[in-house]
Image (cartoon, rainbow, N blue to C red):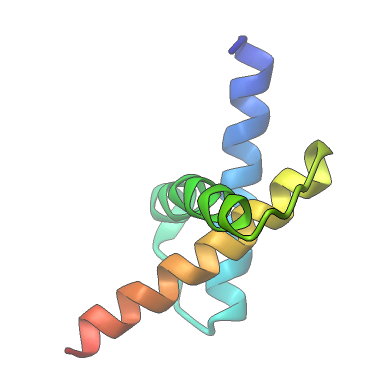
Length: 83
């Protein structure tokens, strides 16, 4: 992975993490926290999409995958927090 791909991956993760916190009506986790949620969400989304045999190609597909994964991650974190 070259530097440009890494930067694109991090920007997609940052935006997906921020948007997921807005969608889930959370206060957000700050810049670093949203980035972490988005990046972990990208892995979760890729795993879930793989299980469902859904293919999302390109930058927009990567963003949607990261967003769905980040929403799933925030949902799980809220369930754990309430327990």
